[in-house]
Image 1 (cartoon, one colour):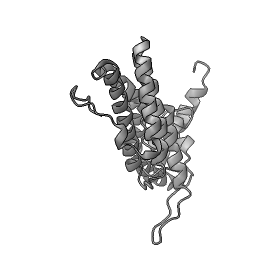
Image 2: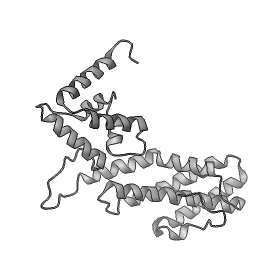
Image 3: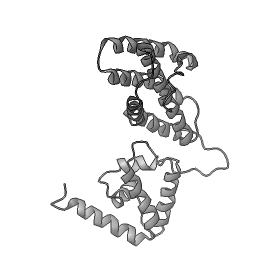
Image 4: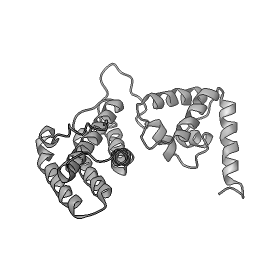
Length: 231
């Protein structure tokens, strides 16, 4: 959400689904009272935004998104809505928008929240239960269907042509991870995937051209992780 014009901060509740509009309005009004009575305004607005986000995001799972990009756009729209609601709370309490620093901080915290990651993980799990349309080749349902995941899948098949199965934990080891969590975040293009993690996976896909190089790097990184001085 762009930082709003100070003269254009409308009540967002009328545009919300009827199933949650009443609850959202109650959260807004409660936060207005708390803002006027307490000093920790940013945390009050953060908590209100998180409660609103919690109400909105589960509805995205009911919309039938077939692409992760579409689902992520829906979640981002919920973040924008939550921000709009707390801007409106601030306007009711003090007559204007909240500061840009608060706006950015709350938006970032929502995008990186465990709730946002949980919703994305739940979406992936739901895809595994969907029927495959006729005439299409079933993909490996253990992996997500993002551009990055498709590139990783192509890479895995190329390395497996050397005669040895490649697991996620092997590719994670190539990228110098001791577990697969960060690798999986990059694979599904999660907001919490760090820039360094993304760079490590990209380097593997672009620079590793042979099974021999892949496995020698995997074994070398595993030995380094087991060395006595390794923390």
